[in-house]
Image (cartoon, rainbow, N blue to C red; front, side):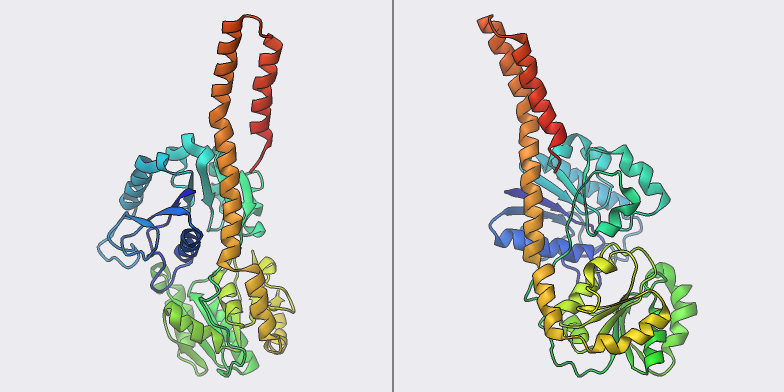
Length: 388
């Protein structure tokens, strides 16, 4: 199968440090290649991949101080994809909706995985304007604000099984927070929970530039000066294994409709239980009382910490392997790719069938117009009802 993977340009594939979407694109791309598919990756030139790489910018945009406006780079990438679009059986986009107008005519061969929140007011009108664009959600919760959009499936993220080695006898004695230092991720809650239970908290995170002058500086920075909180900044994949594996638990006290939350399954891969707030995808990812605990209030979270620490880390790792491997994720996407190819093939064949039937009727002169109409409607009905 010839597959195009179109990644965002803000981080490398995979990211050197922070980055969720580009990391998932990398895991999917490499597993597809491993399974023998011909994959072309459209990404920044600093990507590391076994696929054919089409470089669309010299380096990841977030770490490129020379980039002031990312839009030209993104549009140039779309032009490169458009030039080669006929080379692929399936084009799989991971850049939200930027490609919709340009690739609308090629919609039968396109899948778009949405990695971001969908509850913003502008989204509804936009997605409904392009009903032929087939969408993939990363959790069922993510798609709730857009129930009428054309969702083909929900595919949970997955990680390579050998990416993080589990630690079944964690002796770090600390709680961990991993993510962005932004209001919706609520690191302030994590600090408060850790202090309430008398445990140290280690924070591995980046602060978004937009928040460095407000939320981070005014809310988080003062809290970091107090005892019991250690801020270690952004970490790479190798350091992440040690950081999460030796933690007693991961705190995920979010306050927004999280589309997926990759850090939750990263912790599970390390055998580390998760204490999370019941927002967005959390109830789909965390099995309450098995791989973590789910709280709705700060009091519930504080009281749940001892229960979280008592969970069986071997069970947590096993549930990760069963539910969130990159092999399972790739299998799910391949099922969608094959359905897309079948439907695209029928769409291509339909006009030929109609033309061929008409030509045969004209040549023989004895064909029934009723039979011709029946054949045409049969093809059209199949196209309309066989949803991917």
